[in-house]
Length: 146
Image (cartoon, one colour):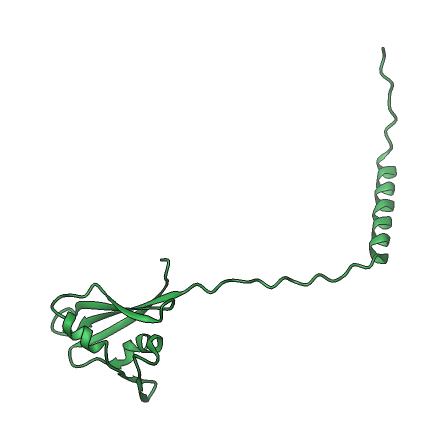
């Protein structure tokens, strides 16, 4: 059985049909009342963080500073713990962690209570006076899951 030839419209006719369809669709969309969509509020749960303050016995410029241990503040429990205490300095650091600190920052000097504001206490250790022997170079901020 022979196939029948189909008549193919010319390109100009196809362009006319396409333009008509687009115009009709645009008109329908303009008439339709589409309620404005509100952007959903993105809810990101606050993940608890931990702050790690590394303490060193100050020896520079004569020798390298010696790592003495770390204080770790946990947001989930609002407590400060110790980590990697060097046995030679552990007693001093445990006693130091029980007291308030004197912070000298931006031309001001003030006390920060370890018991009333433990998070602020650990964040201000780099600017605190930690006796004659110890310094805190920085405070690392990590998520507790890291």
